[in-house]
Amino acid sequence: MILGKKIQAECTNSNCKGPENAPEPVAAAETLAEVPEHVLRGLPEEVRLLPSAVDRARIGVWATKPILKGKKFGPFVGDKKKRSQVKNNVYMWEVYYPNLGWMCIDATDPQKGNWLRYVNWACSGEEQNLFPLEINRAIYYKTLKPIAPGEELLVWYNGEDNPEIAAAIEEERASARSKRNSPKSKKDQVEHPAGSSRHVGPCRKLMGRKNPRKIKTKQTKLKT
Image (tube, rainbow, N blue to C red; front, side, top):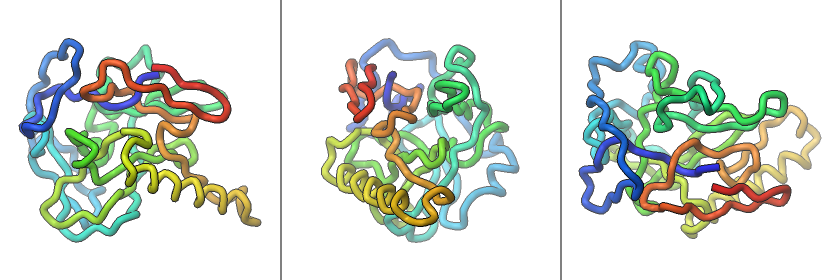
């Protein structure tokens, strides 16, 4: 399984290094006029859509009000497809369903997705302010740190390499353990950091890594 996200356009940030393998054809630049009405209606009051600062071809999500650490957004919406049916791996996550196996939540078509489709990939772990979670076999984004007005919301998957990410993941695991032990555990949602659970992994490539590291779980070992 490949973890991470593949971008199609070169980042304007000088610290951003694209995938080492051959680049895909650059897609036509997105415009605000092309954003579907249902996406605009679904925007939280804390954010707005504007051209991205990290990808010249993309629209980005920007904070208009302070967003506290631990704020959760989602779920990520898209068509449910088999991996073989997906033509573009930029706008999707892969989720495991017991009765269906691995399925991709594909938001390549803006009409099929929601505003989380426009959250871009950080050029490094230092830039990220969101990280992905699986909740009841759906993908959510959660803020890793406070986000100030005028900052772009950026997600990145870097496992537990970063101490802040490791602490956030451990916090989620503790929350999951607490919910499992509660009397209402069967009704409560249990969160898992994307990639650390055997149920989730994004259909995207890690930027700047030709051979992403293996992710281990108690039940199995996920290979790239």
